[in-house]
Length: 281
Ligand SMILES: Cc1cc2nc3c(=O)[nH]c(=O)nc-3n(C[C@H](O)[C@H](O)[C@H](O)COP(=O)(O)O)c2cc1C
Image (tube, rainbow, N blue to C red; front, side):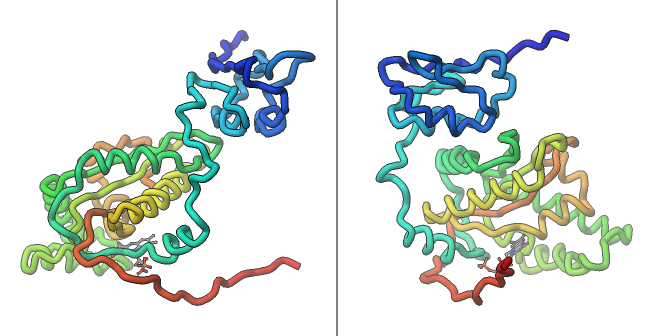
């Protein structure tokens, strides 16, 4: 059976390629070769094996390679642009779960920018199929909360709440009587990652993506909280919530996060115990 090869739009600029061979050595699919003269070439009959990782474009010291129609001049250079080791330490040690938020919505542009960058997170076999379901407006999250709490009440009435989720029984009352929002911690926004079931590593891809989202958010003064409570409600006892959110039936729901501007920002890192390491001797 004949299979059509994908058009990778691979091009190496003969004026820039000095045949150093770095792209050939790095290519995980081994589909590049140096001919006896001239710039690096794609082995056409192997193009179906391409991971579409763009490593060739990224590794070329001279910006000679373009693939999938991407112009290397539009990539961000790494030299001189990486955060310092200290900044990354402060970011990783200083990220916090925030449980009190300002009422105001974030500008839509800022949310879009965060998603755009976080979507650069790695995915198994470079499948790149993380779907971001976002509530970008407090009023919409209010509506979703109402429905979710209603669903929780119905699950309680049907005795469908698993014993380990007993704590959910108090959520509808806390919201109705005291406006205490345990489900979303009062945040104006909510994001769920989901990935088609047939991806190589669906759950992990979506969780990594949210981890990147969280760290990026902190660098922009935006606070987050991993939302296990909403995740359990949606995946365990209010399954129709998936449809309210428009998440396809075939997607694995990876995880959830609430976010927005913090009411009270944190001032310093916390001091965790050292890691438990099993050094293999
Ligand atoms: C997978 C996961 C689920 C979580 N779910 C919730 C949640 O539903 N509500 C909440 O307030 N915090 C939630 N958290 C936050 C943890 O409780 C928090 O990480 C912990 O209290 C330590 O605080 P820190 O994140 O500020 O270091 C979750 C964290 C993780 C990693």
